[in-house]
Each structure stands twice: as structure tokens, then as C-alpha cells.
Length: 227
Image (tube, rainbow, N blue to C red; front, side, top):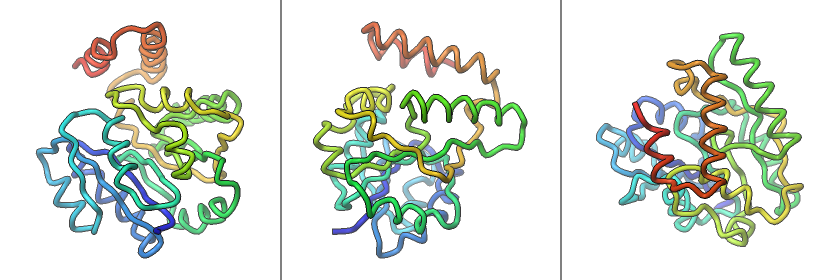
């Protein structure tokens, strides 16, 4: 069994995927890279094949489903869920292996860093890392590292197109087992570049409140991706 399975959901990520796959190239014989695509019209799948990733297709544009397809087709002891527009440090594998030798009940996530020099992003980083570390509320873009037995014991990601990370973390049996790694994942600033980051944070909070009140995810999804 491979030690690590890296699972990446994609849709039209040809511009970002080569950068992440280059960062992951150090994995070599220690694991596998799984791409679960949901209908890319660019060169995403071609790029995944060039880098030797295993490619699976989701018939729905549904990130929760994509992540679960990847997990169910993985062979690794540890599952690492990443977004396609993230980057890792050059020594990520060496650092992460030191953690994976320990308790397999612990679920890890990366320190939140935004791949942009603007000072305003440093403020956002501080707030997100406080929320994650002290309130045990990391999100999917921070990466999630979980042992496969722990993943399936908690019934994995549900077949939902939005809030799949919040939903999964809410269902964890022991949130005390969530731990932040002491090195970062670098997240693309693209989702904040065309909006006020604090206004967007308020909107995201409102979307989560609507979902927690039981509103249809179809309605929330439509509003979330409204141009």
C-alpha cells in the first residue's frame, strides 16, 4: 500500500495544476496523485496525464462527490485533500512524513498563507489561523490530511457541491484531534482579487448560516457562484 494518496478535485485548472503537480513531484514512490475532474474544457486532464497522475471523472460538478470519488479509489494509508490552486514548500514531504509517523487519529491541516504580497492578506492570514487553531474550523483550501480508516469511519465527504469541508469537519467525532501543521500551504489570491476580502468573508459567513438553518444547497450554490 502506498503511504500517501493526494486527491485534487478539478474543473478547468490548466493554469494552476502544473505548478501544484511540480510541487508534488517529490512524492515519487511514496504515494500517488489522484485528479478527479468534473468536465474541464481546457487541458487539465492532459496535464494530469503528463505528470503521471491517476485521473477519474465525476459526472457532476460537485466537489464533495469529487473528493469522495478520489478517496474511494485511493490506496494510500494517508489521504491528503488539496485544491488545485494551492502551492507547497519544496520540503513539504520531508516535514509531513515526520507527522505521519505518529497518531493516525489526528487530522492535520496546513498553516494558511496567501500567495500574494499585499499587506491586507497578512491580516486575513492572522484571522483565518486564529479561527482554525483555536476554534477548530479550518476550511478545505488549507488542505486536509487524514488517515484512511479515520476518513471512512467518519463517512467521508458527502455528495454536496458546497460546504463539503464544513459539513465533514462538523461530523468529526473528536475535534480535539484537529491539528495545524507548523508549515504553510500557499493559497491563490484569485478569489479575493475582484472583491473586498472582508465583505467576502461576511458573505461566506452568511452562506454558512443559511446552510446551517437548513436552506437548500441548490439555492445557496446558485447565489455563491452568481456573476
